[in-house]
Length: 373
Ligand SMILES: Nc1ncnc2c1ncn2[C@@H]1O[C@H](COP(=O)(O)OP(=O)(O)OP(=O)(O)O)[C@@H](O)[C@H]1O
Ligand SMILES: [Mg+2]
Image 1 (cartoon, rainbow, N blue to C red):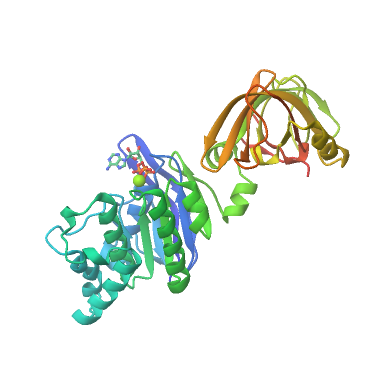
Image 2: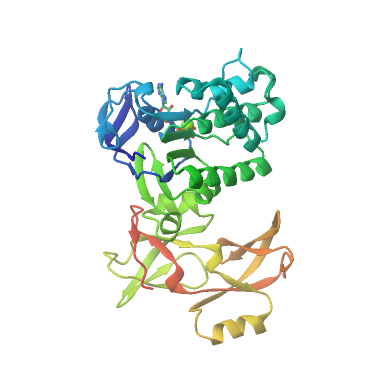
């Protein structure tokens, strides 16, 4: 199984730098999810990998062989595009079997494999339909079946599930994961859905403005975001801006517009009094309760070093969770509870607590500052 890598891959469209010096590496058999906001260069990167777009600079390697100038069909890869192009005059079954025909399988074998994939995609009943008669989501599943049915060792998937509803999307994510662990094809899967990336990726690569910002296993990227952009993009978090009011021996004291200043234990830092600091208070680190007895017991074990009182300003039901927006001084923080466990109403006073060591901090340029743990 070949791996895939790029060296300094760059694409300009006129003055626009769509992809900027991307050096990316996917090991043989690995599934990398390329994630990032709209327009950050994901599709352009994938198209250069597939040979559908020629780089302005840099190279593409498959299995350490440079393939930069080679046409798509010489690259041993199969691709699903964002704008899935099916053959309108062929049936669904023939569309799915098409790639296998190119690989030289006889008709009976082709149809057998194509039917297997259509079944996985819940599209068996449409095998004789013609693509223009299908819905967008159905066409997308046919395109995905067509790519998965081939034996190409490299799969390049550009938002293959973007047109599916929530139920089908989650089901297909699981199918993709299973198919991947069965065949272990080197895969790049582009998405702007972070749940999808976290569900199926062995690794996640995050792009912003043409650049590859961070690559790593999902948990590592989530727990250790390299900069403020990634923290904001990945986590639904309370990201507040503050200013350093005091530099102390083990870190800083910062004013983040709450009633009280917060003390942040930092490892190496160059902050001075008056500097801007960005603090991410992730909802999952906030212990939150109206019942003060319970809060007191949390505090008594010494694990929560900071505590502040606020008022519930808003309640938002989001499926099985309730999100509370809590005013604390001049800022608003959100926390979540399950609907079943929800305990407070709008207007009530609550106490919020967190461990200072669970905060995630960034300097004024957005670079991470390591919090002492
Ligand atoms: N053929 C082209 N000509 C000119 N500009 C282009 C072309 N293709 C892409 N771009 C521009 O390059 C940038 C990156 O586009 P790209 O399609 O790679 O983004 P993306 O990350 O896939 O976004 P999305 O999530 O919306 O699909 C965008 O600003 C886009 O407008
Ligand atoms: Mg795209």
